[in-house]
Image (cartoon, rainbow, N blue to C red; front, top):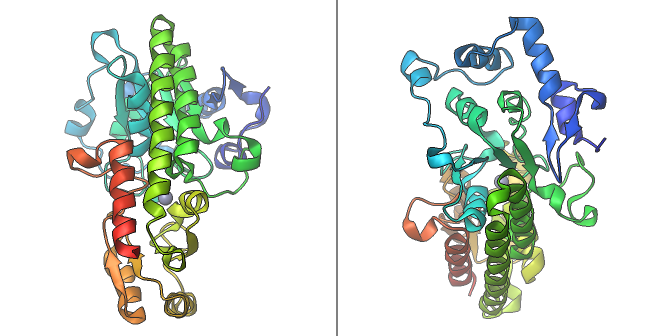
Length: 347
Ligand SMILES: [Zn+2]
């Protein structure tokens, strides 16, 4: 019996004995959530009934309408396995490994924060059809545990942060900063874990997934070296970042940028007047060249901070979510855009 992340136990009050693990990083809170649903709703297997059950478990059902229920995504076409990732950024990492051998979908739309996301009935349908479900874990998608019961019994749940060494990611369920993927060396570990999960779910193409992953790890190593060269062009005293939220911790640590703080101390939580004033004072004292904002956050506070500290605001940093343009639709494209944005603002 594997150790189950505490957030699953907390979210569903699941005794560990009700959980099983299939393969590396696969956690299955399935059985117990089914028991809850069965006792509440009888033996329901009809999709509409599942969605009603998810509403009872607290999933946002504001968008449940007859058309929404009918508008189920088509099952994975031509026999390809369906891989459902929580965020667009993680889906981009999955696509690097799957190429076109699997159908890949993201639950959280582009431009929406995964930390404060409310799953929709459409997400439940996608989960119900998935062969592999990919989440970051480490507290990024706290809403997922309550909907995982909708996954089919054969679906593998891959918790990517659990593929990192415990010294990096902490013990499962421990509170850590979840934004590991912004360090390309951790993204490379994610790629390996994704290849293992896809190979297990679709053994016919196991060799192709592993070959793709090997190639992508080389690209990520090249990306890492490129980022290092770019950051080296910023004068050392100007290598400081203040951001909307705490996404850049691992990136900053890898490339020697000082992370001075974030406007939101936790997702969706605005700072107190005192915290905000302290951040303004710090930004002034350290001559921070710019405040970095992200499209999924309101620019109001970042602009207010920048105005108070007399510095500029950069509004288009992508991290939890990809962007909408082709250049921002891949992990590498997103990272290169971000690095150039950071370098231009700080240099
Ligand atoms: Zn985030």
